[in-house]
Length: 350
Image (cartoon, rainbow, N blue to C red; front, side, top):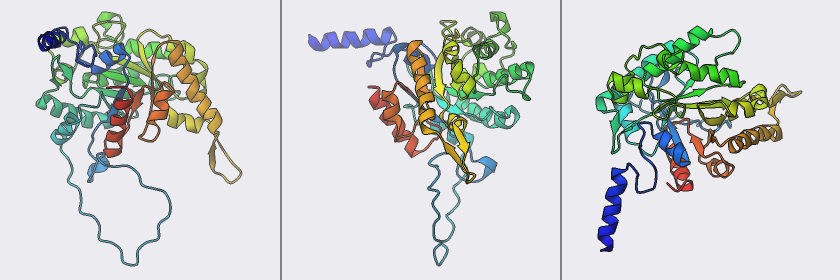
């Protein structure tokens, strides 16, 4: 009798779209169900070909130490070149890591023209492999993409910026990270650019290949391609990265912008913000001020009930998770990043 009750309960959970771990499963973008359930979530760097077309890529990479090494008396023979992985192979690499809740890329942050071909090649390969899977259906490789700063002096005008965001969305992006967010107004402008004009935003009505990349018809895509939770049926998740004195000063106002789901500490850039040049000409970081800035971001996340993100590694993920940074960003696709994601999922009880 007990076994029968358990079986009925499992069937009921599947019919209702709830996993046996208790996570609601109703959205194409898996980030949304995790955010709704307030579960920790973790993303890997998007597997990419090497820069310049050489061997390697970001799989299994990572910088070594900076200490000077004494060269051997007899130089070792150069290692055999690593074959360049095709977009189809890179797509399979991503599919082979379902533990990653999304894949991070900065390919189109600085130059949409330079980054778009690589991203489109990957998405074409994902579309060929089948971009959606599981029951209920979810994107197998949802992509979180950095967007350029909307108000940085001397860079893209608002109309150009809207075009760049549209190109990212048309490439099937399902989550946007706005970099160097300084004001609430700037973030509102960015969020508005993610919404079709027909829905009150400024995004052009062209959808490019995005429906194919989401495994949807064009009509279905137009219904779902909106900002969550502004639209409960939307599938686009918005992040704001705080990485300036101005952004820190305005963090509470930024945190209250409707449509924002995740606040991220831009730890690397903030390290430069809180650095000065000493008498020897070296840059020295004020660690106390830098850490205080990071904790100010965590405080705002708690106050306004936002998920808080940090660019973690396997050495600091546990400490940052305990501080409230329950969204772990891994900016690589290698063994160290895989171990960090596994560690984060264990911390989150997933």
